[in-house]
Image (cartoon, rainbow, N blue to C red; front, side, top):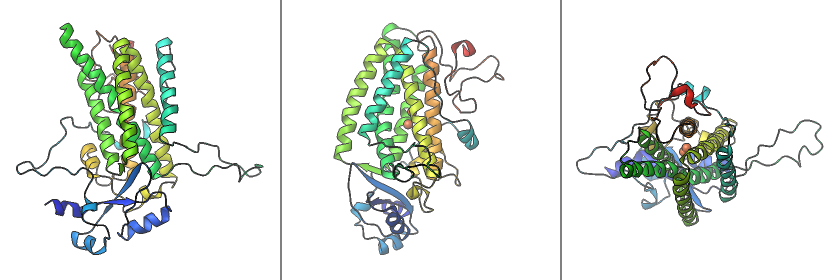
Length: 366
Ligand SMILES: [Fe+2]
Ligand SMILES: [Fe+2]
């Protein structure tokens, strides 16, 4: 049964530093080489017609074709669904209602949060080798029209390094905040007002982003070492920050999510502009884990669609955390799971119909 499942989807390790054209021709002929360079192995998902034909053409050994973390096969269990189902996002809403936006800091606490995010962003850009060509397009008559134009600094592989690094730490704050609120509720014998589940759901959602990208790229020892260090530092700093000022911590996450929306917006743009041909190749399939989790419709399973879903999630985290930072941390109920007296007035919820990029103000919703 395990072998049968492998026949429909094959992990294809491609040497990413070589010419993209050669990748595609390799993918298209279903004849793959295996080599490794840098902090990740890139894994493209290409549909294979049958087990028979794959074995005829593949030069990769059977053991190398194993999936990175295959779904476990059990005698009695057919499928294990996530305990928290992903809310449905309307496809058009993901395109029209999700965009980059910045909330201006209003006080000292906000400015501290923004400063910390800018520092973190600077460090992460260096760690993940992020170089995006945001330079303006050259015009006819520019003196250095050729010499001054930077080559495209990103690639599928570089984007995946960045996604994996970011997503591996993105799942930390929600878990820390939920843990501390849970312990606080039990220790102080007080109710939590519904925040814990939303925070846990956020960290679960970030972990699903990570697992999805891990199906496309496998980190090497250096990347794993970096993730270990980043998680250690980030967990402890979030833990301390949340104890000192939960409001600042939520604002900090709100600003991080602004950056996440920006990052995925640029990746989507690059993909649409034909700069990432491995991901627009007609044989490219998004991983099954993503199809299941987001319940991606059959005609909406391209890499662009996947990035739209992920970006919409980040926009939701941005909205949730900016809103929570506007509330009374001890008294106010979680507005994202509350029922409103007048349901006809737009209010916070789990979906993105009324997504608010800079969060909801307390006076509008409580
Ligand atoms: Fe994420
Ligand atoms: Fe996020």
